[in-house]
Image (cartoon, rainbow, N blue to C red):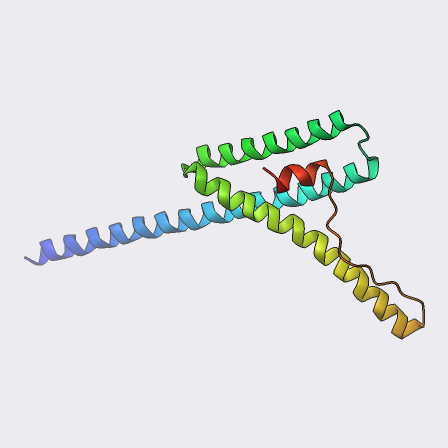
Amino acid sequence: MCQSVISALLHIDKIRGVIFIYYLTRIGVVGVFIILVVSIAFLWDYIAGKLEKSRVKTKIGKMITVLITMILQLLFVLTITAIYHLTFIDTLFVTCFLILTITWILSYFGNYNQNSQSITDKYQGGNDYQVKVFKLRLNPVLIGIYFR
């Protein structure tokens, strides 16, 4: 009788260990997914800044850049869906929402920090300051991100 109770308790401990490892793995997968999305958003913001400086001139060049951005996003979503066995629509929604939010927040807070620094310089050093109104910049990469 004692032997069967002990073996049952050991079996329950093994099941708890497997469940713990399963949930730990799920948390790790979600963490990797979020890190991937955030790093892709930062990468796309960097590329958008470079393209804004180079100024793609022709309409064909802008259309190609928008299409390439949209195709890269689709490939990214399909890759995440295939690797982690998630549903396509959920992955598409979450990645698009995160990338859109991060690119917009980077633009907004960059302008906010410049304005804060200008005002601080004025009151500490007496320099003139110019507060810039936030204006959403659009270039082919950001158009591809916003309008997919």
